[in-house]
Length: 194
Image (tube, rainbow, N blue to C red):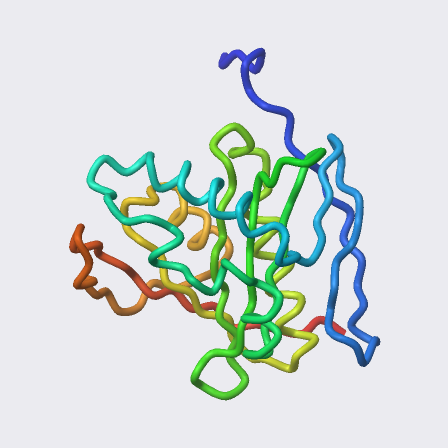
């Protein structure tokens, strides 16, 4: 029998549905263990970059800088508002421990899930699945029929999460960046529950 003494306690978020609201689907809600999910502010940019840089440092060949590769996160409110998207941060006290974003995809009625990051110390507690669910629910409110995303293959846990949630792996591409990063596209058809 496996010991559960060192296993982190899962976070049990309570979902609320604002699907009947004509306003964008915005989550401002407390989660267990003192976590809060809220729309990102431009003043969060430094803490968001710090989180992503820490996660990228887990890849031994990663030489890119989040500030250089993701300029949209330097002023998230303006960038995401202009594109019809929204970026959320998951925080505990003043520390950002996770992020996720939604943005309209090039294909009509498809949303793109972006910037799904969870700090290493908060993984394996269901937060990645929770953040996916936030985007999926927002996509349904926006009348989208599917969610798509791109993920770097070195993020080993991410493909398992996406596949457990019903995302199907599609095309693969190699970026022309300093690390020749291999990225995979995933797509999930959404179904509206009555």
